[in-house]
Image (cartoon, rainbow, N blue to C red; front, side):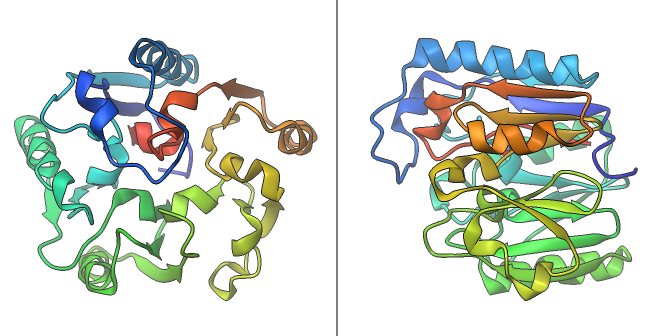
Length: 258
């Protein structure tokens, strides 16, 4: 499937325990009523981009499980079940195994090292794997062997210490363009791409999501919005995800797309 031409998405509703999830931010606890409203708006935006959205039930035992992207990576012919770097999240992968098992979709699993889906960017037949606080070299190598068996190329990309995941600081938005935080703009591993560099005071906007000729961006980035408006997107959709940002979340990590 050409990059960004998604047809389906899987999301999981936030649970009441979401307020007890992992976070590095100092933005205070999320307002659950507002978080649920923002999640509904996010799902609606995916549907407006013509995706068929499957919404999974909330799981109280897993406060971070609404960040479903970290638990799996989707390919046309298989799903990669991850091994999250945070031990408190490892039970979430069993939910994904059961989900794909029910529909008979083939799965591969990471059985050594750690790997979060938020550290993975799939660009057609090339996969970029971020080395981060949640994904280590052992997990990247294990994933790489799986990719070799499926005919994919792969590149490991170290990310700065202040970032949690690769997708926090780099995302692909079509036409050989990466949106990057300034810290990633000169990485040798990414030199073949053109760059849209977000300013430091809009660093949160590096986590945007391109779906076909639409792009979803977090609210509160007027400089980046101005740059995007000069590009050939059908729609630029601004979304308020303040309550998920309080828990280190962004636009990409709230869904699995295929």
